[in-house]
Length: 437
Image (cartoon, rainbow, N blue to C red; front, side):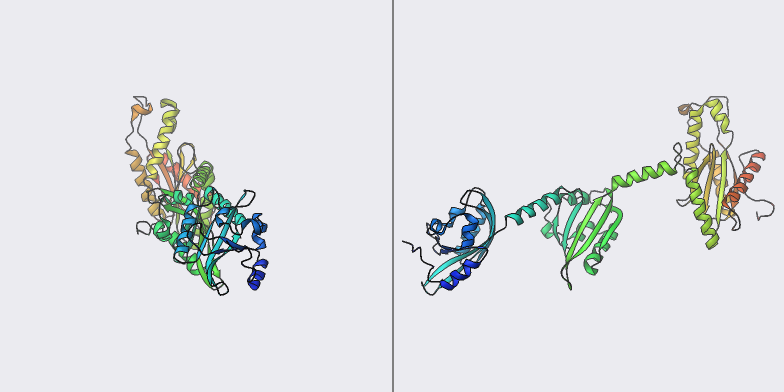
């Protein structure tokens, strides 16, 4: 029969255990059936579980188990005790009233000189609140639309929420324990996403936080996303690094919306050429740069010859198609940093940064010839036969002068456009008598 006063002679140990805030349980070391039996519990255990010492001494610790107690944890406990190894684990125990609580506990074996026998001592800490907070945090993080990724100082992934897999295009069943974040970003070794790898290296290696970085991210599946990245280093101490926390947000919809709003404010709705409002801003910017830096800046002012005929004879639908056809043709000829602007009606401006008037004259004539050679499907857009159907343009060209306003610059190009019209249309006038030809 088990002596219920077994531990009363261990006055010092009992005195210490009675003052510990965590639960302390001492059991016999017998692993055969019925297994270890409780010989001592401290007051903290009684307060936590609702059991009195008399109710538990002589009983198996299994009395604390219930439906939610994890079998795999108990199997590991049994294996550790069998091999005389210390144990640390966490699972669900039950109080006397049947309510569950999460407990984290350590079990170790010790030798009693007094009783010449081995015993197990278990220190148990209730972690229900910590467990619930951890579960709440994981639930919140898993439900976020933003990717949350934790990495160590070797860039190995410690955690990834579901949104991270979706944004980066990773398989959901990827084994993150063997993955480097840099390998996931640079998935094909092409350095396509080098700005992102450089950013993360700077965060981890130099301890520099990134409040917001926006760029296009290439995914493994071939898609491209606009993303915003925020990252901050994590430190174990003031002089040692431990990794970083990365937040990635898919802002593609936001960028698409911003682009649509920008287009609505700055582009002509029919032709998608830039509008007059945008042109004023561009001319202010480039004329200021020309005055400051002395770089050339030229302008082509053109309109579509006989455009009123297209509208009056063939109809406004045909006139609209002619406008769009001309814009598409010009856009195919000019550079990305040039600006095609619908100035009004059938009148257009082409702003040519860093180009002299001689080059602008060559470009204007090239565009004139290109439009004159356009092949139009007359039937599909409703041309009326027996009326002229060829499209031509007339243009005036001018180079900005440092001592003038952009209004004067445009007026000079407009005057040359009128001269081109008087010469019989389908012409370009670029030089006055006081300018080199």
